[in-house]
Image 1 (cartoon, helix red, strand yellow):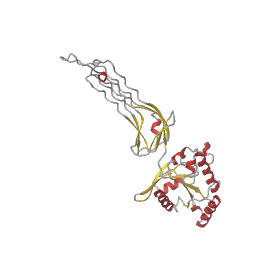
Image 2 (cartoon, one colour):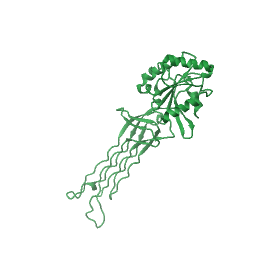
Image 3 (cartoon, helix red, strand yellow):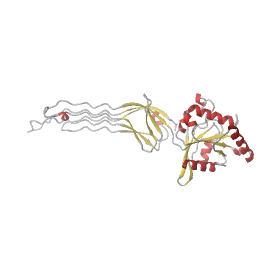
Image 4 (spheres, helix red, strand yellow):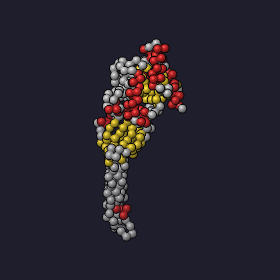
Length: 333
């Protein structure tokens, strides 16, 4: 299934039904009086978060959504039927913006959470409503009001506790597949990951967290290089970033790679760059243990890194369990 994380749609609430102009006409009742009923309210439009959805791809094929209009009132004081509300299912984690004003209307983060995005039109009044002691035979009614018409921008930001950050081929997807049941594509070429992947990392019963892997960043991503920074928004809800670094990259060196990624993060969002970030050196299985450890410590010293540092091999699983245990402890605090 194609991954789509941003779409534009239009929603139209139902029009309210018109009020009825009617007078009672029955045998042996010469002065029946007015009996026109009210119309029904128009149906409203709601967005509903649904746990089974993980992309906005369905909205690529349908952009217009319209709720049912209310029925007009009838004689004999009969009120018209109200229009049925329209419920539009979206993935959990969807932000809803008014396209014209860019106002944030809501953020759907809970299963089955509802957000009213277009109010149905109010019903029209029948002539029975205008009967009074001074006006026994009113011929006045009102029309139903139009429902709200809105153009919306839906933006999906996946819900995860931990986000993986790093260059292409740093081993982010391999780590995700190693510690969870997720099976992202893993291959020996850049940009294997083309869209975010999620995996649940289970430590033990009732202790687990969600990890998100996004496409790798390269220098100049904030200007559109590679896949750009469009997927960085999916890390905005995470509480912890794991910066995955290949200690033996084919090109470049780990120190400059770390600095390059951090610079791109700062250009994208000051809030995201200030989030808790741990340094995770990957592929230590390529070197003897002592040599790999010395190489990592040298990079840490040159960077004057103050945060937590881990040394792992996502391919063999070395150090991955300890990393996940520390992540779980941090999240629980």
